[in-house]
Image 1 (cartoon, helix red, strand yellow):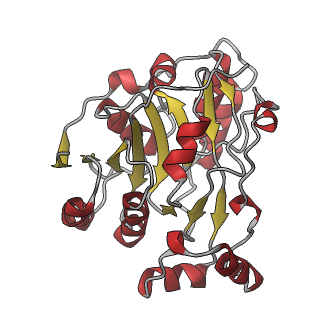
Image 2 (cartoon, rainbow, N blue to C red; image 1 turned 60 degrees about the horizontal axis):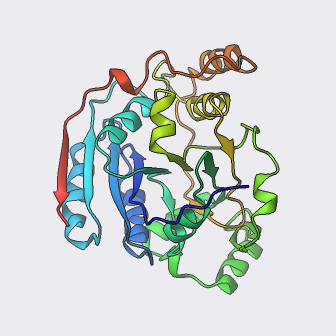
Length: 287
């Protein structure tokens, strides 16, 4: 039986971002509106222009929780490395990975806390916004996290979002445990992991350079180490703003690396993981 976590834990929300400060602002504003404030925010900046750091500084007085900023130089898509560096600067026992182009609802942290259980990782799911609707959201702006279910239904009928079912909450836990070793469709834009489980597998594998599969690799190694999946569907959706695909020139190379590890249940620790990271960070907000 899943052992529920009774003690109030500090959750470290790690937001990866790159050169899209408008989306990051929408993400942060939605986090500032959480009903559960037992968390910290760590911006994991994968080499953005200086305007991203400036935005974080400007928004920091609004943050009701500690806000940190971790940066490394732009040397291509290195999200695995910057996430590892952000984890090093985290103070929480529970890690919640989020992308900087995702907006969350006010109960997001509260429900992730309710789902947390020893020996489990929790992947959530997402609702995708259309290209034109994303532009409207960021220009007007439209405050997504305050919209009613009826408004979302209207947006679905107008094809502004791709689905609405993830918005409906299912409080029963039994179905969440039906796929304990299923590694697919657990994506880093909405993923919760205990820090000690993350450290035990040496974090993200930094051999994955360029877009693709670093999150799948992490999940496979967690499962190989005995950590099970607890499904977050119908509990913790995010709203994913539309953007053009990242450079996928390394996709096949990364996929080949992933396939070499699928089915190898002895492969647990990343070869080039968090143990090799060094980082400097800024604290913009001291609570």
